[in-house]
Length: 448
Image 1 (cartoon, helix red, strand yellow):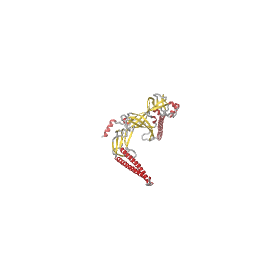
Image 2 (cartoon, one colour; image 1 turned 90 degrees about the horizontal axis):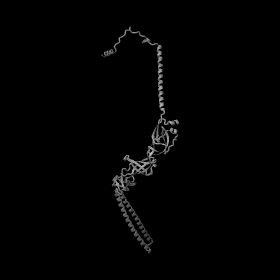
Image 3 (cartoon, rainbow, N blue to C red; image 1 turned 60 degrees about the vertical axis):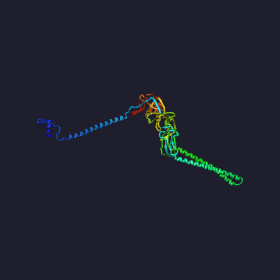
Image 4 (cartoon, rainbow, N blue to C red; image 1 turned 45 degrees about the horizontal axis):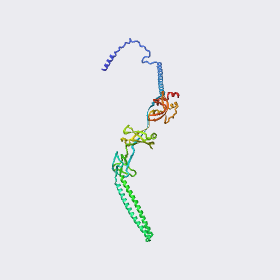
């Protein structure tokens, strides 16, 4: 079926061609060997010689094209790598404005007077009269230590004192009797009724009795002192506030035993007046020379965000503090705290203002930090070490070309520095960076 459809389709598209009679066809002209015949040997050798020659020409042409392409590529990258770009300068502008020079430091808030209340006797805490943030008055009872042992010691001291008084009375009586015996023996010896040896014995007994009275008086004083000490120790069981203030720390609880053997344990910490506080700051040794007594300062604390508090430097203490080979000095700042918002222990970020200019010619510090290439310095005949702490070298852009200028600087706020003396004018451009592969200006390249 499919063969029939295919035959029918082929007949409809391509109609059959009728054969032409052999008598009507023109005679064929044969220029070469007939099909099926073998070419002559000379013709075959000639074709074999033509094929290698054409192949060699193709190889030579392809090699020359690849070589030319490689040379062109190499020249392109070489010129791209060694081409000279024109200098490009990054600049900042000189202007006028306010400069505030300051020293920054961190410190801790504390009360002007802080008293640590301890115990001079050992024992168990029997009662606590105050707690955190309690206001106390001088002499107020704030705690008690169990007093029974100290009461017993006082009673024993009193008994010893009474016994000493009795011994003294006994010694005095014995001394009086010995004196009478001596006087009687002396009268009898004057009449030769007794021997001299008996008189000497009576005198010795009298003098020994007198010495015994003195010894008994000393023992009485000792017992009186022991009684007084026992009474003082008993009084120490009642802890009193040494000053007016506020309890900012309590370190014991009821029932806790405190031992005052080597050092007095701290029971409470009382701040005398939190309306007057101080900030102890750590100032680096490189900045301590800029501070002085009476200098105003401002600070912030984390508790109140960006709100600024003010204070005055009371003193810069001479005692150095060395932490990890860094030497700092304590600058004490007096702070008023009338609303009691500031609390002891807060961390303060302090700014000490040591200089201020309202209309200074300001040079951006980026221009002072710029270091020109060596060929710039050689072209401008500038010594490599001509700067000092007070004089700095900057490069000002004039007519599109940088020129070296030396200025004398003043105070700085970390971003801008004051020009105290120098040729810079307002709105002039200072170089902070030079781009391009060759940073030497065209004029200087001509000199070089």
